Image (cartoon, rainbow, N blue to C red; front, side, top):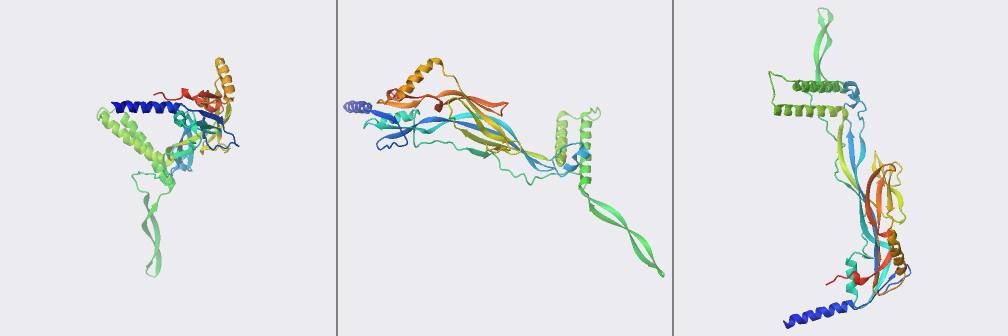
Length: 367
């Protein structure tokens, strides 16, 4: 029991000693040399824009040149190409150390514990802790579409037997006569002939599907049998159509764009550029259409004006046991193509707000 009381007395003495100290904070300038202080920075907000883009690769079919002639399909792709479309855009905010807002804290011998409690509160960031997020591009799949296989399920072979007549000279008595001789030759059908046969098979599948859709009272099919037959007919038709219209392959590409606001009155800038044939490109690539980021700070209520003015005045006065911090301002962040709004979100922008001082005792963790 005595040992327990003694431990309580020691802890209480240490807590009083830890709070019996002095901390002095001052702005850190380029010419300032800090030998016995701790350097910290105020936070700033980085706008994080995540864009998901669908990349579609079109591989032309071997009979694309005959799509119009045999099936009436126009504009069938005859060359491999890529197309991009925006799937989604999201906006978020992250805090990082602001290298333009550095301060030095000169601590008393017994004030270190309180200062690290302030750091843990998140209101300031150690100067060496730059949590900059790097811009990145992530492909969710790395498929190779250069060797796409097209299946031709034709029931007849691509080679045919052709009979040709040759003439051979045969001696009869004292003269030669021409005698016809028939020979069979194996020839390969050309692409147009193959395309014609494939188109005929497509129409036969469609005709068969229509026959199944017509009620036959003599040979009725149950629902499950019809479902299986329609599924197989549709599969075969898709395979044969791909010989003419080609095949599509789609993957999703995600890219993160970072933007650091710098104008408290509001700002507008090109976040990135977007091209239908290239996807997301750099903001200086004129082949893409500009996608804008607009930031509109919300109007500060009149009742706050006096407080912000007083905070700015007090920030210039050096006082003990107070620390510099920022009061963030709400702002509406919008992403648009110049005409249509694509995404928007309200964020707290630290660098838009005033710098003020707060007594450290308000930030200390109470035991």
